[in-house]
Image 1 (tube, helix red, strand yellow):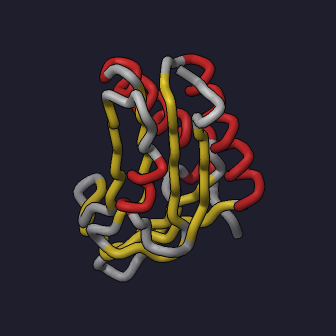
Image 2 (cartoon, one colour):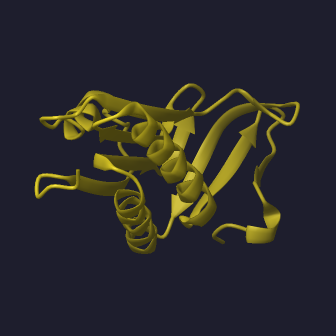
Length: 149
């Protein structure tokens, strides 16, 4: 599809994710499929009870890389619109930490593109996650990428 009206937007935000607003960003004439992914904060990880998470990012770099991923998705899949928002700051259990959505003429392209976007965002966008455990401890996940100091 990729018409002039097509959209690709990536954001980093401290505010809670407004899913209804993001879903409206996916609306377009001719869209037959909308696929969305919500990544939520869960109450455990690797057998340890989790109270909350803190995400940190270098916003300008993260948004540039996220935007690059969305443009790649538009070039690779027959999609109309693609949007993604990742939270930063402290998030409670149950909150949406990352949201990605894709609209397309057909479901296969929407599913494939949405999976591509979330997988690439998790692999490439410089966002660090710190888990806060019920025992009072906290740690950056993936210590080899250490997170900000």
